[in-house]
Structure formats: C-alpha cells, structure tokens
Image (cartoon, helix red, strand yellow):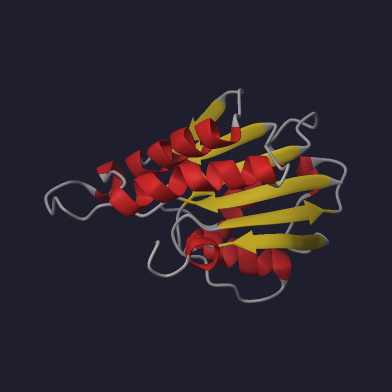
Length: 168
C-alpha cells in the first residue's frame, strides 16, 4: 500500500502582467493558505516521506510554506517536467519514485492535477488553488501505478471548505 498526496499550488498573483507565467509568485491569500495546508497535513498525520514539485515560482513557494507547516525535513525534488504537462507525465514521474517512499506528495498545476485526482478517484472533483487530495493506492511499488490502480480517495481538503469563503 502506498499513499499519495496531490497538492495544487496556492493562489498566485497576477499583479505583474509582463511576468512570465512560470515566474508568478503567490499572492496574499496564497501566502496564508500554504502554511495552513502544511499544518493540516501535520494534524492529519500524513506528512510525506518525499516531495516532488514543479519548478514554477508559485509551486516552489507553496511547497516551502507547506513543508514548513507540516515539519517535513526531507529533500524536495524540483522537476521542470511537472510544469504544463499531462496526467500521463505525472504518472510516469510518480512511477519512477523509490520504493522506500511510502507516502509521496506531488505539487503542481491545474488542469492536470484536477484531471489526475478525478482519474484516480473515478469521480469528478473540483480542485482549486491549495487543494489537497489524499489517496491510498493498492500497489506495492510506485512503478505499478496506473490510471487503473485501485486508489481510495481518503480525503480532499479545499481551503474554502476548511476556513470559509471569507477566509480564502
């Protein structure tokens, strides 16, 4: 049994229209939600063993604050291939994770992550910024992960559901 956390980056800023999409930072709401999601991960007892993250600035900032909030002490693997890619690419990357990793967190972007959550769960799910999906996957080795893998969606946390519409 493996556990997979899928985290969408927190809310990013559109304040600088000339800034390349890859370089957009978090906005005020994102800077508030990212640490909260990290604290939630710690409270729920699902701190990852390993983290894989897109190289975009908003994902880098999100993973920094989330890892700080959940007290993750390991290394984060930053992969440019997680930016602007497909669910197939995410699955291929996850399949390359070491077997000693029992709980993996992947941090990236929509629409790909929403599609991945929906494919693994077998149901459509809205996946807004800073949303976190927690899966238990019936595989012994990450290399065995596929769209057809038996995956139980243990929980799906969205900032607005946790802290209210006015808070996020």
